[in-house]
Length: 178
Length: 405
View (cartoon, rainbow over the protein chains, first blue to last red):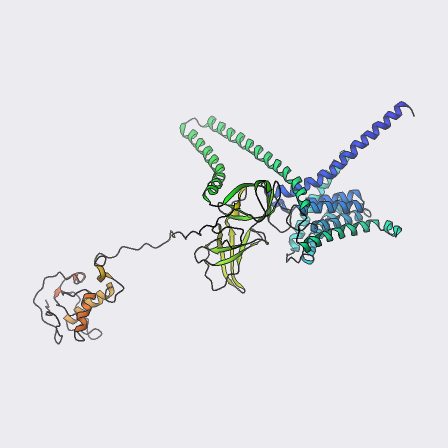
């Protein structure tokens, strides 16, 4: 191989390493920012409390990675961090988001998840599933007498789906740059 | 086995991760022990960032506010050249400044006034739990904050510390459904248990229907929960009604009304007295007593029969009737325009004498009749004129005279 060829290869390898690092950083920073948003922003804009950004980020990464194992681990990590930032038992959000990560990744292997309509539908469905399954776990495992409001969850699901479209677009652009 | 696991690798990982989390949950429930290290790591990662964000937000907003205020002042200076305009702007600016400092000053004043040892803290974030009301404050173990400490503002209680981390603490607000505190009403001293409900309200439980609680009545902490010292204001009852399992009392917590920014964490609580209810501004004014009834020592005691205005009026009518030989309830009414000028002793003093008298003579004094304003008939100062004695009436003491003009 010529000297030029070797230099080209090493340059490509360096670029690839840089891109991988950036991707890994995005992989860490985006969920962190989503959790930070959930902790900090509703203090000033109470109406934004309905936004479940960690869930949307979990769905996004599961859909784009198309690897159920990766979706499971990502969902579990985000859920456990969310649990840690509240007084509830650790594992509640973890289990629910683990399932969301798994199912979202499984769906992405069978359907074209680039379609915005499908993204909206999936976001709505997974939000509803997330809230409903959390309520089931809360009642079944912990015996809490919490109330599930289907109407409110339906509306919040639609709002989260509406936010998911531009958010996923933004994250796509970030990913393309990385 | 290996091929089976390889074939169902995704499902296996899912099951393993879920099983691990279920075990973690079971461990926490079974031992009632928290996985504290995990929380410390997470809170230690997230709260420093929220602190920085808060710092940046405060400084940036402060800068923008200053900038716009200055712009406003410049605009006013351009357009208003007279002294009145300038003074108005100054006044406006100072009012804004005072308003901004007001909350902090109130907190500091309350901190000095309250006997409990407190530490000021700032809200830096909210909890992530669904259907719950929690906030993070920027004080933790390093500042002496511990789990179970009360959190208050000068207006009332806010909540309690449910987790204390090195640099931050998680506070459960009074409106959270899992929150509970012992409370007592100010006026009727009715004890109950404060419980959070959604939508920023609380309810008071364990109050019987027979117990008296009024709408608008203040509730204070009772001190029985061993979290809140006795005597901190909680809020005013907004709805009070009888229910199937006891009185239903709803209350809006006073400490959470104006939005939360700074709070006080009670490090060492000291019980205080529950303040007495202040005099109502709608209290009825009582007129001073009439001049003739005001002095007079024991005879002025209106609780005794015969000493009220109605009694005096009744006896005056009776004297007029007796003077004219009229029996009330029969025939035409007597002439009320004549003056009966007698010397009846005060009711108390007259009583023993009246007891000595024969039945039928209840006055036992001299009776004078004059055609005079009736309102003066009871003065006892009218000149005595010749009068006739009431027929058939005994005279236990002195003469009873009657004169008809």
